[in-house]
Image (cartoon, rainbow, N blue to C red; front, top):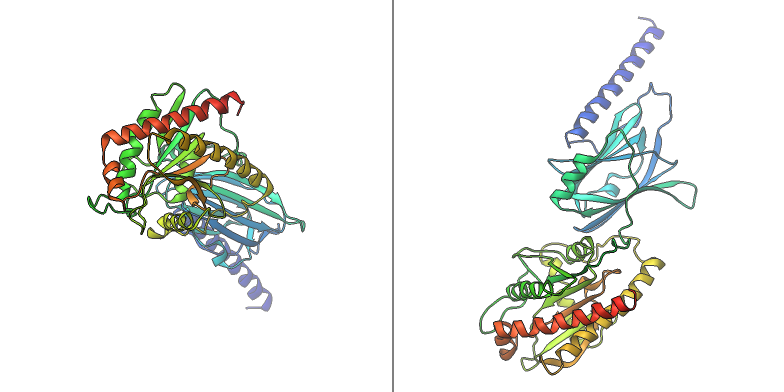
Length: 418
């Protein structure tokens, strides 16, 4: 066999092998068992592939951001696939030139795979831990002339995910997603998120005499409070959890946002080393704690995620921009107004701790767009408080006082046009 014939045969073998590999990779990707890297284009292709030269993933079990840097602007489309829940990102022929660990699965996603489909296309498959939806899917310019594909994912209900699968069109490109901090649809309903602290594996504090866990006390009280708030004309209250389920701190805030909450009230009943301290306390968010007790309490409450293996430091990246900072400052003023109303409603009616409005860095209060307070109903380390926390008549009395505070806050907010 001549050298020319041998060269042609070798070339044909390489080309055929590359095409076969691309077909196998495509099948694997569609089955959810795709490759983490693959040749971006076969030797027979005439168009140069895109170069994806960087990637990063950050987030938690409620929100996760994926960013992929491209040398040139990529065209892309996004689709949803069920059983298991996956987000499919289709791209033109792409050479993935970053380390595989840079696009490692974390946050909402338990597996991330990417590779070549054929000579003209590539695919990224994001396999989720739970139903998700993309709040943002767009290409943004970098300062150096390159581009980045940004995907912001958020947890969703099974019903929402099923609707996304049902209504999508595989023939159309990705549609611009709504801003996650966009204002809720204006209506005449004032919505309150009632958050029962702890739950599931996170039992919280424990009653010294009754051995009743905090998670049970907060859920019982939350149900009574939501029922009372729902009897106020123009108010709708809902529970972030309605059973003994663990929710991460980020999930609680995300649920409130998805329901377009106008207020967020997190309920707790902690313990202290000083058993003589008793009474209710209202906390608002601050990076600097008002006192040592508030600082220690916030530190304990923020450990809830670590009990279930979540890290409170893994929140979505790039959130400290000026617009969010301004929104957070405005929301903080409303949170303080709500706390003031609660204290005023409690005075002379419900026992309060000394200096009842305090502040600290509670993770569950960090929603930049929802006025939020954390209400310590009392302390399970105090015998008298423990008795009250388990008393139906006292619960009814306190829910009346909270309802009064919410009503007055709502009326003032609506009167001022907020």
